[in-house]
Image (tube, rainbow, N blue to C red; front, side, top):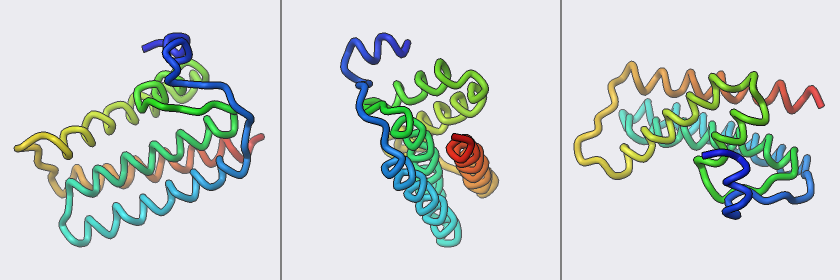
Length: 139
């Protein structure tokens, strides 16, 4: 979906930029990374993927808050990153992959995550978080 379509459908809306909300969303991302680690220790691997995705979602959302954009669609966050931050295209694609995996962990009856995939999800969430944190600190 294109960002223009997201705005047209009300899935993205312009609002006042908020450094405070950006910081809070980034802090929430950090907590979800820790939740992912905790769940790995408990062998709750599907929850690891859920938490890793949620960490990435909140890190991405921090950029939107900083930019003064309110979201109502996970898909539109991915589109926003791809179109507004071309240098984040690879991370946006990764976010989209984990968005689909999160959906599968919630609804698929036979979706299983391996130990390696669970650890990779945590590593990817950490990398995503650090990248977004760097961008937020540049401005």
